[in-house]
Image (cartoon, rainbow, N blue to C red; front, side, top):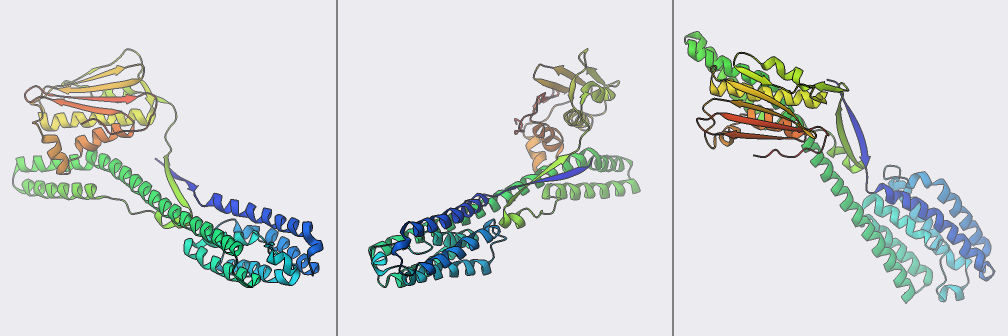
Length: 405
């Protein structure tokens, strides 16, 4: 079956960059309005006009630079902060001393905070503290003294930018952790799927070769011994993991990636009876409803494979002479398949022991399949009275959950 990957980007910090873009445009307009409302009080208004004209052009021209972390380079940040500092230091040249002494705004006004916030979004709280220090020094130099208003404004920019920088760092760490968790989950599910396939095929053949070779003796016994060793090695490999790590966590610093693997399956429903009927024989009885039991093709195949795995366990553990019964029930909300045998049953604790030894028949080939379908697999066994496996699959897909023990 062909597979394709659909990658969805989820970034907590991207909305902050969009907010910064809007902030820079709005505060540039605000700085112009402040000057227009008080231009008669400026001693050299042409200095203010020249600077504010360049400020508006600079703001509009650099909008792409503040659209994301990749575009916002260190060189741009340095130039943007230098431009803001020049505006602060030009204020005494353009404005009157009385307005400055009474707490009048600087030429760039609150637009300066946008430069500091860009540092915070790009490099975190340390970069924000670095840029805020330069802004504080420029404001003190512009005033000529340390005043209460100056301290208030400097601390406001300092605390706000450092807080935002810290939030960005936490968000990036959270995205990286989420990406890694999704990577591990995807790898685990793929490993379980491969383990089921291997158990249903290769491991079954190796186990059969081992049994037959031991029974035949001679050179066949040696072949059986080698097959047994390979079975143990393969079980260990399957239990330990088969997949290399993907690049999700490596790319998380640029915005977490979320990677979803979609499997192209044939569309439409399949009659489950047609998949289970081939198992019927002289020692396997098959009871079915009179009407088709329709399920989506992937769910029908997995449910049939789980039933086949249960029958394999009957032949393997109950013996060739054991009888088995397959019962299919078509309920309004779910489909139930029951596999029962008249074998000796399973001793208490044997399933947990087998799973601990890496034997994946019940854990993966049966319960794992049903869990992936959002269904359940119940196993009831009484020593001397056989074993019954009840498989339930919902007709409407829902989130998978762990099967009951």
